[in-house]
Image (cartoon, rainbow, N blue to C red):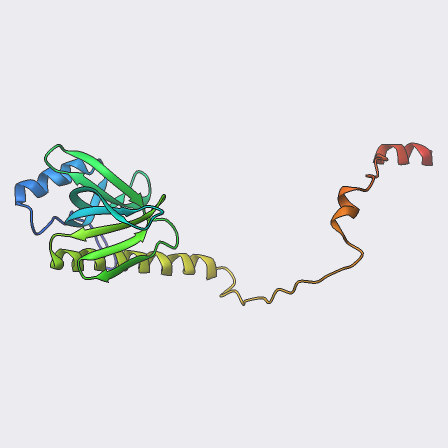
Length: 189
């Protein structure tokens, strides 16, 4: 290896402060092949349906998972006793992570508003930092990709131009010119 190259950065699993080393090792084994948890915490999962009432859905260990095979990041909750995945949410583009309380974090899920109620405020703080750091890196990366070829895009003003000659019924009610291009060539011969 030349002196200018750094060794590949090895990402290690980050366990929960509230779990024993053996429980953390069990958790890591549930993640799947080539998946790494960047942060883990003991939580209760709540969901708010249309009537805006929070309802507890499950309890377990929440993990911020880098899923290399799927090339994405997920929030996943595992039951470490049964060794199964209870819930997951992919971190989609423009994902917004809120923390109205130090121990209570919210975000928009695929089907409803979701909240994580943390058992330990220190874990909540570390989990929030891991998620917000990741979202910040992804945002900067997408901006670089978008701006890279020709520099930053300048915002363009859009103006709604009204043309009284163009109406919807003109297009939907009119006859279509159905003379084909080949007929025109035959007429010229």
